[in-house]
Amino acid sequence: MSFEFIKVNPQYAKHIALIELNRPKELNALSRQVMLEIRDTLKALDEDDNVRVIILTGGEKVFAAGADIKQMADATAIDMLNIDQFSTWDQIKKTRKPIIAAVSGFALGGGCELAMTCDMIIATETAKFGQPEIKIGTMPGAGGTQRLTRAIGKVRAMEMVLTGKFISAEEALQYGLVNRIVPAELMMHETLGLAKQIAAQSPVAIKLAKEAVNQAFNSTLDEGLMFERKNFYLTFASEDQKEGMAAFVEKRTPEFKGK
Ligand code: DAK
Image (tube, rainbow, N blue to C red; front, side, top):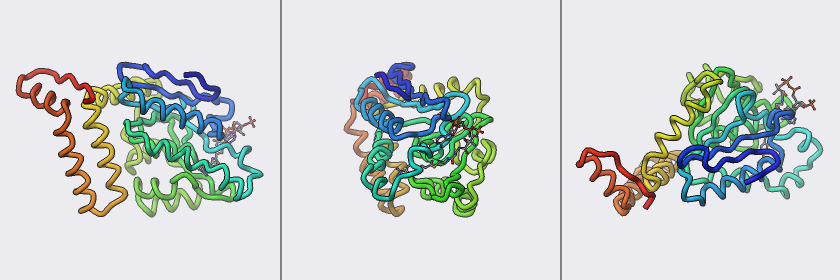
């Protein structure tokens, strides 16, 4: 896979793919082209049976400083409507395999939203999160008001969205926005460690479990519990469940096949 603004390695490690944003001069600003490349890559990786976990990073210096302001500056509301960038963002949400964001440096505006659309976030000590759209006369448009609020609570999200202030990695950890903080030079090592733990599990159970966790944001407790139950039953239709439980009884490591 070869693109202009992202680097993709579908076999970064066994069953683990890597997407790296590669627009360094613009601090990985998410132009429409960048988002289309991410969309097409995620779709392809989601369909690739060899891939079980996807890592998305901007590298050690910056994750992404937001959507491309220069590209948006003169757009009308109808341009935005017609471009329909949401179909691109929806693809990220639709990806059934787990995506881990490895965030170093700025994750602002659309960059913060991109990280939050992923399933987990490993941050480095230099990571800074923010929704500064208010400072350029607009507001978050790719889920920032919703995902940030769910992740860190109303009053903190309100302050970030209304003032545009950035939060440090330390604050992000304390607020529950990120899974952990690691030194920048260990970012990929630590992220890979997490990815490997997930890639070693049953891909069927992983898919169903991810879907069930996400359901918690879209339903009442009873609806969510019912959804969870159905997915739980469904794991018992998989060879992986038989293999996982047999391996436990036989005191050996399971060999999951995603079937
Ligand atoms: N867009 C375009 N270029 C950007 C950029 C951005 N978001 N951020 C930085 N750059 C460019 C700068 O213009 C500069 O380019 P040159 O002047 O060298 O040509 C280069 O990157 C280096 O930036 P700085 O010189 O500013 O670097 P500093 O270290 O001094 O400052 C900074 C770093 C991150 C604090 C600063 O660059 C900054 O404030 N950047 C803008 C941050 C921001 O406001 N982000 C939010 C953008 S709005 C939607 C989906 C998503 C969105 C909306 C709708 N739909 C699905 C409809 C998202 C919107 C946004 O993210």
